[in-house]
Amino acid sequence: MKRIFFITICYIIMPCLSAWADTVKMGYFILKPHLYLAEDGTTPAGAAIEYFNAVASKMGYKVEWTGPLPFPRLIKYLRDGTVDGAQMMAKNEERELFLYYPDSPYSPVQSVLVLRKEHPLDRITSVNDIKGFVVGYLSGANLSPFMKQHSDQMKIEYIKSDTWFEQNLKKLMLNRIDAVYDQNAVTAKYEAKRLKADDKVRILPLPEPPNHVYTVFSKQSPKGKKLLEQYSKTFKEIDLKYEDYVEKELANIK
Image 1: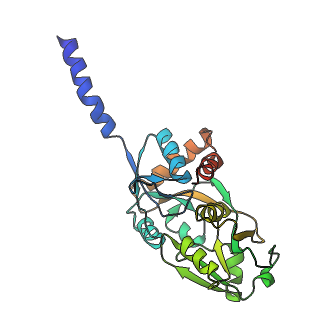
Image 2 (image 1 turned 180 degrees about the horizontal axis):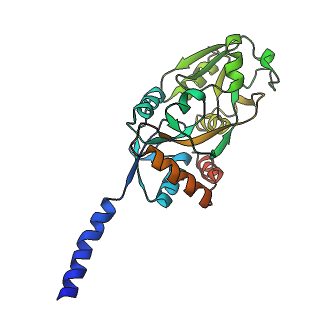
Image 3 (image 1 turned 30 degrees about the vertical axis):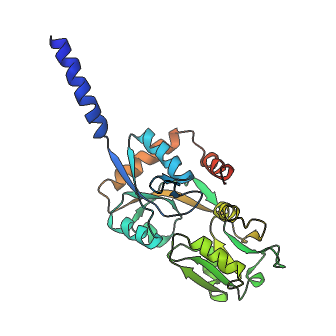
């Protein structure tokens, strides 16, 4: 009788323990193919989403995704600890004031300009090649060192929208801007292909080494430092390649 009672209690308690599993709250913005909403309009998807879900599972956490958020709002949420962390974050001095960065990034990214196919420029060797350009970009997002250093020699027009790349690409096709800037060559390639414009544009790398993106955690989150330590430990132990998740996304473009 005692054995039956014990087994019954286990069946009742175990689902509860599973439900009580620790949760990490991650904010995200739209950056295909890394971060976006699936076609059902509710499920977070993308290479960075799937990658962190896998890492968090090995850390012993369930992930609660908050978003998609406009990028400036995500930064605010990270500043005040509304979310515990985020993906696809480049490092700069300002962000290091309120974010924990692990020692290792999970992916290199190459900054690029997207030009119309008929543009005569086929290589960017210095700022002289693009001096005076009107360039479209995302409001609140970081600039690469090259773009930051030479931003006074071009005009950067910012858009506050989850669909900033698509809007900028339309402006590019209408000759309203000279180029679209993106810190991530993969994103530019994905978006151009998704929007059926890959044969209408050329994607040129900027003359600077690749940047890197990190999984970050908020210093205002009560569990931020603990998450950093657990993530860093897990990152060294796992054999997950972010590039594999990216290639899967590129292969699935319809």
